[in-house]
Image 1 (cartoon, rainbow, N blue to C red):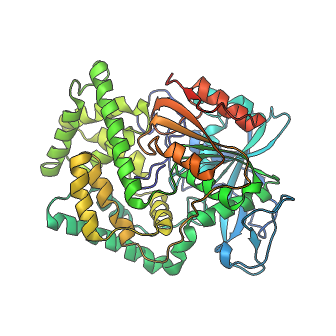
Image 2 (image 1 turned 135 degrees about the horizontal axis):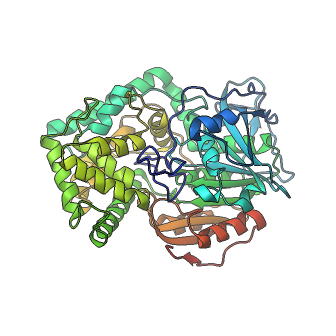
Length: 540
């Protein structure tokens, strides 16, 4: 999940999403929306109390249609202060050694309720503790992700070596899905945003995009006011320490993907002595500002798209837009600007929807074939494939309703943002990045408008070493479009205790996709064995 082009992490590698194509895979790559039938959970207890777990197998059934073999599911709710820094009270870390940060326990403070799920194997032995999961986004559901990962290696989930030694604990961060969700962006404004021209060259078109972002910011300000800053990454990282204590772990073992690496890095800086092991996969460089972050993603997606076009040329039997896939996609975007095709639901496949279909497919190598088929069908007058890909990215249901993924994504990103460039500078970047990154640059430049018009105070996360923490494993993929590989060593260097593990593969995030990566990460999680310096794992 990424920061600027937010996207739910592909939960299970190698299996095209059931929401994308019914190819016989059981589990979806991108978690579906689950509004109805939320599991019954115990009432939130006082801050700092142990989690009161209640069975909730229905959560797995709602998401997947069944429970994983030999897995039991329990749910709980943990109450945390809305504002840790203003909460008052005394620090109450579960460890004997004091942490750098403090998990203050207020006596009379308003709280957020955090939803947790625990997947525990019936074959568990020599239990180490809990493995806390975050899939990224920001805005991705850790509850959903923990369910998917519980299905084991046969479905791209966690290896038995891990599930038999750890409880798999997923949580929805504050503001996300089941955890006091932020909801302030209307479905109509989301449709307008996703469908808008990704590169409005005329001043009138650009001004229209500015006005749309102003409306979004104003609506969220009207509903939440000054509370918007409370959804920051630092607040969520402090929540993680409350979760660690609530599940009874002396120290935290954590697996964070994409934005989850930023969340884990923030935790390590705040609570370095409360860390047992952190795996940060799909690393975000916390020291990048919003402009550098957006340009890095533009470069990363251009690289991934180039790799897709090469694959098309090399495997034309699977790519109906071969031999020149780049031309096919750019032609489709150009045509969408002047004569978009109308879909069955009445929407027109404008350039925005087409671009998000492309973005959606580039998160996994397994999505490339779906993109090629979608563009081919669009040329023939059928936009179904384009809308399916784009809607999976946006978490848009067939009835036009959205999950709160992007409400949370915008809120968290903008709460973290120290300083967005002014509108004139954004307009300049749009032109500059159009020349350097023609497909993705303009959209990533104009995406900066959201936080430019976002209301409320900011609460930037720390960017320093995790002094006192044990070794932290930072995993990077050389073909990652969303968190480009060059950010991996930068995050490891910033932490001061980071060890880099490199996967020479394609797509966003690496674990557990190949034996080399899986064995290295498993040994670290279970035995705290740090991989050799400079270990590089081949693509396959």
